[in-house]
Image: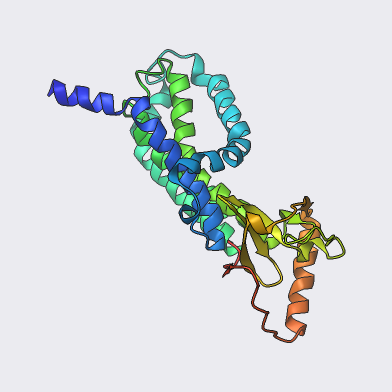
Length: 287
């Protein structure tokens, strides 16, 4: 019995699962981002490059989240209590007795919030879903021996486990929401010149130019908003790459979407020309 317990504790040691965990989180982000454009990222890169490609967008997105979690954990009212010191209070006894029902209520409210934001067409529903999934992962990990040997402070361990739990759903959601910003024209990098030459292409509106998605191995990936297609271009064919940022304010984005809807309703249906570069049809934006 003691041997099995020892083996289980060893398996929970951070050095055994931290590497696979980092790869898993990176794959989730890349899946959420590139999957929106029907690109199988593992066809273009090796598994060893997964973390390298995903680390920058993940760190830039979650750095302030991690700082907020750490600050919130240490300034919480119960952070000065000794381990288990709050269980004998009236609030501690109430929470200990009703924790199951409180968790079910939390799940119910989370699902209701997801349905509401889905009904009004807001993409924030994915953030709500990520929060619910994060707590579902967090609670069993907190009661297990994960990071118990590495982190002696209960406050630090709780914060670390919540960050580890939250990164799993938030990685996929962040990738999908970044992709949606590009699809809808809310925030994207666009190619300012013709990729196959050094000819200035600045006469065209930013909304009509190729939107830069990223680089996978020896290929640049773009999204063509006119043809609504994902364009894959070999690096050898790109003579120059000049990228500019386009970001719309919420008010301008809403006005543009309304104008585009009226224009599409009035315009005749046209069949777009077949692109000269390999491309894939892009799906509708993530709601």
